[in-house]
Image (cartoon, rainbow, N blue to C red; front, side, top):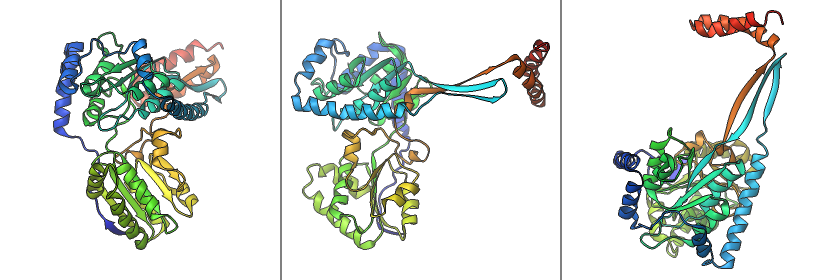
Length: 423
């Protein structure tokens, strides 16, 4: 392996100051309820409406501000997400098996009761996140989805986001951002019931709030700055690869950008293309910092080494631009979502094609995938036995309990052995 360009350390590490600030906010919010919610909304977002929740007529009027094309395009994207989520749901079958005579074990998939969905604003109004966490929840059978999105500071809200939240199936829509939104949904403040799961991306304060609220409720995952890794051989187009790298670099100055090549010549050609495209990129003020500080370019000596390097990086988004795509799709194991061939790109996954864009970052792809319909289902086991089966397993159970000195446990087995003696 040869390194052409090195970048910064990309692990999403806990910031002690952020943790302290969020902890203090959550304590205040839980103690003082909606008064604290309103206080922080005024302080951080200059937003103090009579109600944070939008009424149906407000939602209808807001959606009416959008063009027919914008509404049609969002419907198209959401239908793709819904179709894929439904197909995923259909793979999650109940199970029942008789492992020994009279001993029946099984599991069933039960949806959580309620979800709090957060749709980020900030630098970009990422209304596509609405379908990514609301639609899978609804397909899973979640009864109630509360959806929050931050206001445009002091100005109101973004119509495309309200449309996306509503069309995705949100039962209640709130214009409220930050830690105060997460607290309202997790604690159940005002007339808002506490949710079972918090879902959605946000800034570092939102991410830290999710971390601290985990246990009080469930969360989807903890996400740091976005990442892209591209594996490319000499058959790839350096200009197209450079374009896709910069497509993610515009997200955030801390975005992770990595390229693994199979020749030094291709690596240098792509670096030249990146610098060339940055000169005219509309969002170069952000993308150039991300590329400068976090861009990594490596040359692997073989396809096997390229796989090893990629799996070690464990990227959120992984694109394959190689003649032998099959080798990589069969051997790669650590990634959030995979984009096979130059015909697809991260933007398709983020916006329109239907796979989910809420994905693991900071090497979390080593142990989890992204948000999907299964995130909102609990797989719960059960057992059922005949009297004869209960009597047959009782002595084994009692002996195991005695070995552990858990005598009361053993007694529960012994009484069943005696109870079903005649049967």
